[in-house]
Image 1 (cartoon, one colour):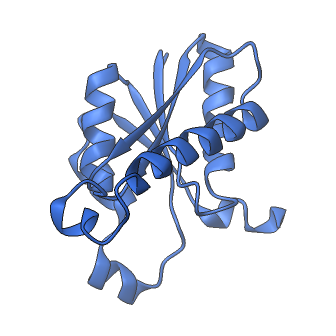
Image 2 (cartoon, rainbow, N blue to C red):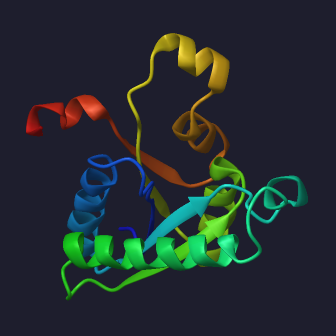
Image 3 (cartoon, one colour):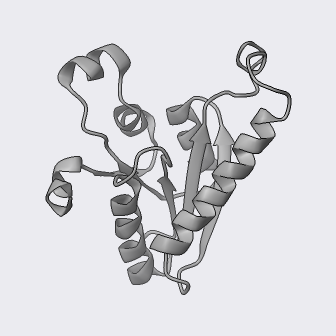
Length: 150
């Protein structure tokens, strides 16, 4: 059974991460696992990027993200489930894998956005990069599985 479950959460995409967290909660209840929520911010501290923002914009973005992730966790994770929240910065798929290694995750539950075939060719997919490069199990929650809920 899984003991450390990582769930990357995109706070800008409503309706995707909640289904992944539902899966994580189910697994956590059945195996007494800990859920780790991770929100990855773009490289806001990179000198090229940070020069376009006021000095404390990065700090404010981190604080806002922490608050949003806390509210998200309170809404979707029952109190009896041990869980942690993290905000990190960097390239999304590599940051997810680095964080999984750091916390000793044995499962990543990741929502997959519905993208067109052209988007996948041109942009790549965070989910496909994580699956392709992850040394641990990855559970992908597909959008088709929950489109009927909307």
